[in-house]
Length: 226
Image (cartoon, rainbow, N blue to C red):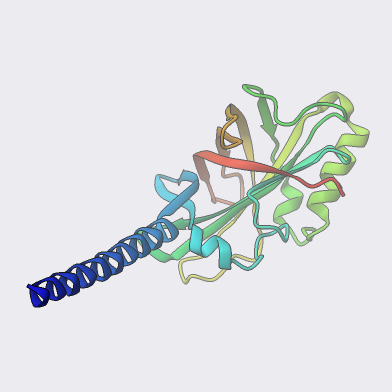
């Protein structure tokens, strides 16, 4: 009888240990699934081809700052300077070598909340940004000067496309785009804004490059009041 009780105790202990190990393995796998699940910031089409900005929680925790504006946030707002910046790393999920960057900013009137829902933000084309005049500071200076000198035209935006050639090399100059961007909704639970954009760049004499870009985004907006 005592031997049976001892054997029963051993079996129970082994069962509990095995059960705990299974639970640990299960929740470990579940945690890995969460860390490796894709989170989409922006889904777009460029000349009919799908390009998306996405990352996993694991990548976000390990991601080094490598965006045009030295921050990993997709949209940042500086209310003191009344300028918002946006940046998306867009990749072709069917071809890892095919990627591009869409980035720029919007200057808005001081004292105005940004973004305003369902307001169309105009994106203007500027040929100067497709020449040697382009530098890291020109984009910011342009928006800053527009806000100071052309108050009647605010808000005004500038968005550039940096893309690769057929050989996978980054093109020497960016492409300036024009169109509209709109923030459609705000989720008070996760503090994310949903919106969309329609941008294009027409070909003109001596330059046949033509781009048609549409996309939707779902992002948090970071406040950077420096």
